[in-house]
Length: 264
Image 1: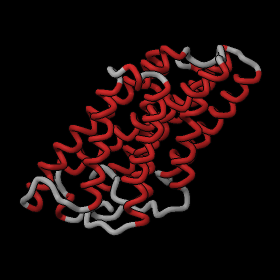
Image 2 (image 1 turned 60 degrees about the vertical axis):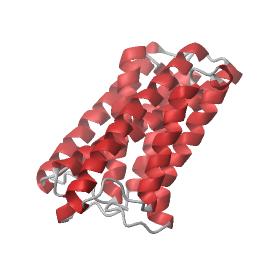
Image 3 (image 1 turned 90 degrees about the horizontal axis):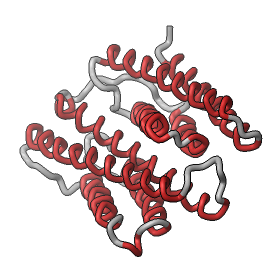
């Protein structure tokens, strides 16, 4: 059986969850919302099976090409959403998060899904840990992007189906903080990995510089939540802008520019 079959079934499950959330918006029903959450949970389980299968086939965490990083990014975002929904019951917010997840999956479909061998510099525990923490951090930043967008929408429409503004603000700040912690650990382990592989802690290649800018931006956001003028709408806008920086660091550099980073 093709290991990607479970990924394809997960994508179908996420798509059905989006359709159920749309249904919930037009005909509010707690049962429909629960079906949507069940579909996301089922999709996450199927995607986890596919990830573990590919991991076993490769012998290492399979994140060595664009398909596999998009796959892992999607899986991390789904896990991030489930954390927030199971903890805070954010309901129809899943529509916006899963739409973003489907965009990641759609961008992955049709790309090379092979499992190439690791080059020597990547064949280390530091590599897997660095990449996993990086994309888990990205997932929380993507969640903050979605929550920031929802905050701006809710400020205008005041929908009873979405969390209130105070909760959205709290969730946005939590998503940024958790993403920042994970990305900080990613940067630290990346430094150790670079030293073990090449003898220096930090490389001034464009990917490394932009990763530091991502870290610096979200470090500023962790401070901005205590500054009154940046709270609420300002913080939501920063969350949207920050994810743009993340996307450029993740995709823009590899697709548009040249870098000597091992995964560019």
